[in-house]
Length: 171
Image 1 (cartoon, rainbow, N blue to C red):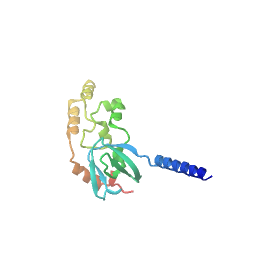
Image 2: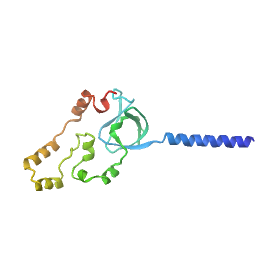
Image 3: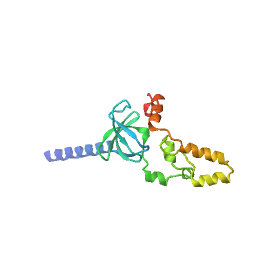
Image 4: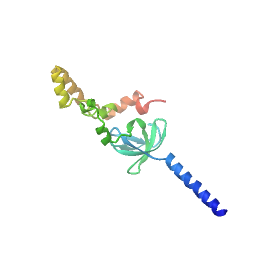
């Protein structure tokens, strides 16, 4: 009788451990933009712990509102604004490009609002297409000028903070 009880306890304990592992399974995400900040708590008002690189792999441990608690391959942990994470690896993103994506230089970055990368710039193919459609050279040049326009990261950060956009938005 005592042996059966011990076996039963052991089975329940094993089931508990297995169920806990499923509930707390870490999810793999990738960073969308360069320079994404890891905060010490789920708020942009908290101390910045580290900065992440574009396409860097992280593990999501848990979440709180708009922030995910993550861990890097270097065992750095902290809170990241969830908008800056994607489940698609860079390799998967390249395979799933549409025809429109193929005509642009970095559509992935332009969807996330990054100004450090060209926003839907004209590729050679799209320039040829524009010329065959009788789009004026002035319009093509304006698109090139626009794609070369850069906004400093600090200026963009100030704009986002003052407008309470993205991770600075109020709930």
